[in-house]
View 1: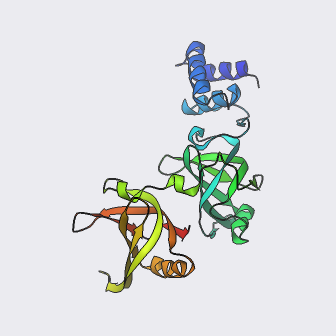
View 2 (view 1 turned 135 degrees about the horizontal axis):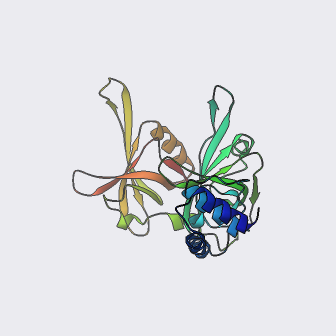
View 3 (view 1 turned 90 degrees about the vertical axis):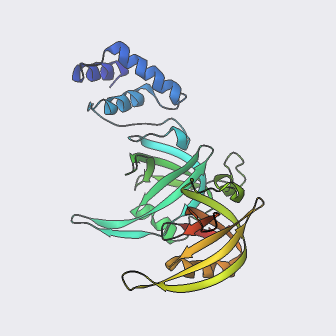
Length: 278
């Protein structure tokens, strides 16, 4: 299907937009994506936004695209970056099929991108072939919108994952995606920090409102800008104790910022937080 065919099909199915208006939108999208996506792909994306279903809805990307330029609805997407987080593999059981999946956080020059690996691609994590800190190229993925409206990349059976040389200087180091401790404030919500554990204040048990038991541990984390108290909850306590036997230097991803009673801020680590030795 040619570009003109698509234009005619879109305007025929949505009479509220003229060819001139459609071409204007196309020019805008072309400029926004810096020519990394072809006109056919851009027209199909515009059609999807207009609620128009067009034939052979197959999106193609040209080369590698950065995470900040991704939008939902693309197929055959190639990205490159550094693995910031590699979550454990989970299994699912549905009425028609079962399988496994895992999620990654990929960092590039634009920021962080959530990546979902399905089935055999998730097995790469099980075998230890994908680890935080690696630089990789992800080929032939497809984009979806998550429940919060953010674009994420999915990797299925036809996708490929290639390691890149660690000296790829255009891919930022892990520290590029973290927040300096001195700049933390209670309005930030979720943050990523890294630093060295300077003190462990011990752990304490407590009883929840439903009479179940919990445990909390506090420690001091320092970087070159300052120090903050990290509060670790429940199952993450045992995980942190194991990691601290390997190294006192930690990477904490997706922690929550909360105000302490003395007016300072604390970094809270719970089941939604990823922690690894940095």
